[in-house]
Image (cartoon, rainbow, N blue to C red):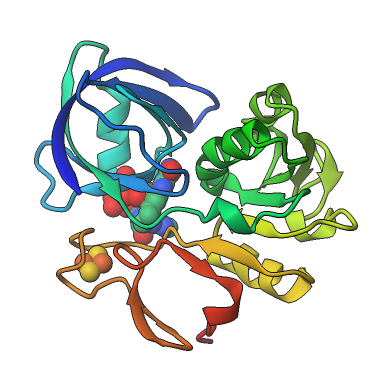
Length: 244
Ligand SMILES: Cc1cc2nc3c(=O)[nH]c(=O)nc-3n(C[C@H](O)[C@H](O)[C@H](O)COP(=O)(O)OP(=O)(O)OC[C@H]3O[C@@H](n4cnc5c(N)ncnc54)[C@H](O)[C@@H]3O)c2cc1C
Ligand code: FES
């Protein structure tokens, strides 16, 4: 974990509620796919965790949905302003298990962390397929970006207003080697039940401190309790225990 001051170089809406922000600093190290950053915002005690959407040395891209005080404050920030950001948080996805044709399943703001993962998998020559799920047509983002990487992409909307009607689990392709997923918990539970290979889940649960001190994010696994912020946010399918 590293505390850094990053300069905002872009902050624009992609949909009515999802924004893309780019942050830069010459000292910034490349983040791993599936890691997250924790952002300090004026007047708010807790930092706000946001997944790394893309990263290269010196530059970081995040996509965030406006749901409350913190993310609304972020929409008012302008290029040239600076943000206090904890970087290098979380374990990230393990790419070594992908096999030759991995499947990426993202729901809503669970889509952004899969972008850098898809880019890295494509750079390794993997035939990555992505299924991106949203509630309705107006919320869809990322389709073209994943296609531009050379992924085969299916978009689902719950109301059928765009792409395949239903949830990501209604559009699972045949014959994938492994899966990576991120999204709301009901979606993750459905992915757990309906997938027939091993895979990795990234949990975007609500967090407290964000760096392992408060236990506010702990969840039960087959090897004991794990803190989503520290030992996660990525957990393997085989270690999960779903609490009802
Ligand atoms: C590891 C991790 C990665 C994340 N990555 C992303 C990302 O890439 N893009 C993104 O848009 N969001 C992401 N989130 C969620 C994001 O952190 C919250 O949406 C944000 O902190 C809300 O802050 P706020 O001040 O705007 O809302 P608040 O004022 O704190 O809350 C407003 C409303 O949103 C609900 N809410 C807040 N946090 C969450 C949450 N984590 N899950 C579900 N509901 C929540 C609250 O219950 C409340 O109803 C991530 C969360 C975690 C833990
Ligand atoms: S958020 Fe405090 S331990 Fe994870």
